[in-house]
Image 1 (cartoon, rainbow, N blue to C red):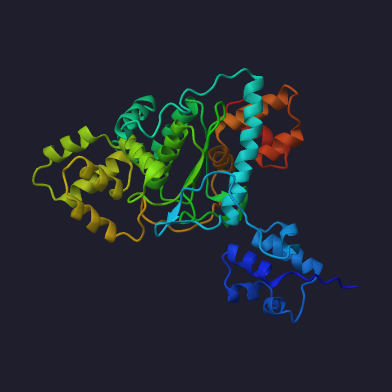
Image 2: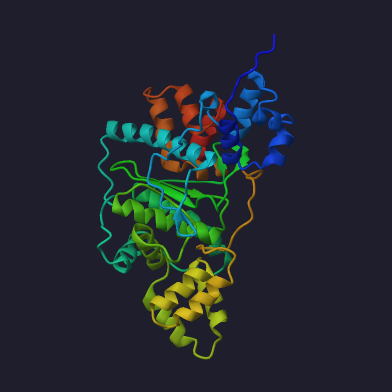
Length: 383
């Protein structure tokens, strides 16, 4: 016997909208979707299960009389058109929850190992000069300008390694979990920080442009420096409060003002656009960051900066990238970037010591094969 479910039309519409579906796309997946909304026909239990899976909606939520409020467990500092984001996307929620689970495990393991609190966490306040905090981060992370393309390609890798060396968990991914069909959208969020005394974590949206990822790494680190958790959006200019402070810290860490002034002085007669391109390549940042640093240094007017941003498709720390799926390449190298070496090493060592089961280890590292688990550890430097 076919079992049909009287799902509330408002809940079905809410789930479809959260998944980014318009009416046409909803009916492409479920030809009778319009009938479900009008009450002409009710979905079967199997159809409702499939609907929950495809829209990334908790199955139980589809039985509610009205749409539930799906709140992020951390502060949401993103803005669109000057207003806050009304509700987080399923992709963002799932990634945050996944990272929290890994952070919880890592915190417990770190405490078991007797790890000390990470000095960087809570080491500054928004009342501190962001230029000075940025300079301190630049020194602690040993950030240097690149000299050639090979240097630019390894910039992120060196930066991540140094952040991990200071005690941070760094995870960079362009998909939800290991699901290559769920590509993250940089217009949804650029990254987030999960502050913790012994297990601070930063996540960067890997579908973003490389230079934007560099900026996000430093921006989220600035949240950790404040000892705060937060989700960050794509606005580089015009923000207020903590987001503006973190933008300034990230900019200062990546591009020192004294070097900008010296470059401008040494390039007398060089067109401004050419100087901006050269500096952006040298410091592995976007042109937008360079224009803002020139403005802070008093070398260009606000009108010049405004014209630059008016020419951009988005007011963001990098050009708007193509949304793409992660696929191909070296699986283990990609997994190391997604999870970070500190987590992989801690999980494998705890498993070998008998404190963590292989089942739990595979869940934490997103695999179903023990041989994959061992190879991940080998590549992360676990003997």
